[in-house]
Image (cartoon, rainbow over all chains, first blue to last red; front, side, top):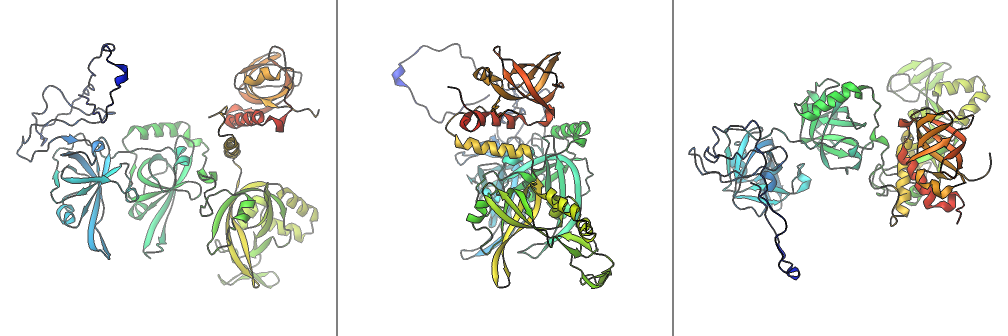
Length: 523
Length: 110
């Protein structure tokens, strides 16, 4: 039966007493599923199932099943509550849930004393909840709980507001084990799903705030090499690997996996991978990182995976994907600290970006109005990856100190100063080879060759072509000391050509803000 | 090119701009000899001129004069390629802004 719990009721006396309205009928309960799962060895007992089967239909909450107490000699489990229904107001309750994650035991020492704790995530058909055990509870339960097994957890057990910063689960509450909390392994795992996903599509990723946790499913498009980085604070080496995933909303995204998952990664490109517990970051627009409490499932046996496979085989394989690299952060004026903030040139000056001790990052949409024509490139070492400046020790002999090699020609790499402008002002930016290439449209070696041959016309033409190109420049601003003078330098990290659709939307949104009180033709 | 303003409109605005020269961006839906139907937020009948070469399901920008019957007599048109390439949300935003801030874009007949 469906039960409606009325939390508050106000009688409208002013309307007096009316006749019964219409013909109310009892609300039909949900139809039991065609293949009713038998519950043989269920500790809750067989005799609760009379004629009515309280099966859990896919969409609806599961109902507390009535049990007649100890049928199999095990401790009575009262009503099985759905996790969704847990709240500080629930009195006696039992949940039947799978332990989807058990964290390591952590210890702490502070002025209040010391202690230890561990956390576990529980999942049932209705939702998930995080549970923590402190001190004695660690000794009591840490070995009992195994990831992947299903348990009955019963009150007494504290239900309190969740500390969201420690959890990636979507529940307002979390559990804290108490001394009398009961945890019993469930023999039968029926009705408890393995993992519960709540997927966010890549197109929607734009609206997700950074640092939030999401689940995602996509087709693996590209796998990077495994790399090692050393943690800044812990000095421990971490393995990491970057993946590129796409989905049928037309976007791609970079996703980083860590540790063992990175090292043992062997999923083939074009396989479908479902991720649970990804942290959203605004690095490069939007990117994802797999949390230590998250999980990865390759080619899972779920509908979404088949849908994606079908889409990819059909049209997805050849589709061009939009990356989030050009997405501005959700709030445009999010302050100088935000790496992805779009600024106007006036704002860059007014906010004194780069003039403090730290490096500031910002993006500007600006047009090149002048390229400084002298010193546009430096002679670099030909060794792949080594970009050190080489010195011409003898004519035709270019030496790189770092590699201890001498080359007969240098590889010229751009190091340019460009003056760019937007509607609020102009600013000088320094660009390196990649961006220089985008601006000039030809390699530095060609430019230098044209100069050497005295082909002034071509050189002038090349510079003229570079003018009036508009890009979104991602820049780094910091103070630099040069000959006793401190100046702020703006360096371009990368330049992206305009995604007109995105930029048009941004401008439209800006214009809309001017008329926020009027109604507009579009939503 | 004449120096007159050609405010950008879409179908709902046709009646307000009767006898005026306007700009329309829409998708070509039908071609019937000298007539065509273009979907610009609503269907618009356009009378083609000698130089107009429209392709079905392409986006097209038309500069023309609005007639009594709210059809448009084409003076110039440009093919903008397959309609899937155009972001019509951006187009609608421009039309909206044009009329909201009409003083920037054209002289409003009162």
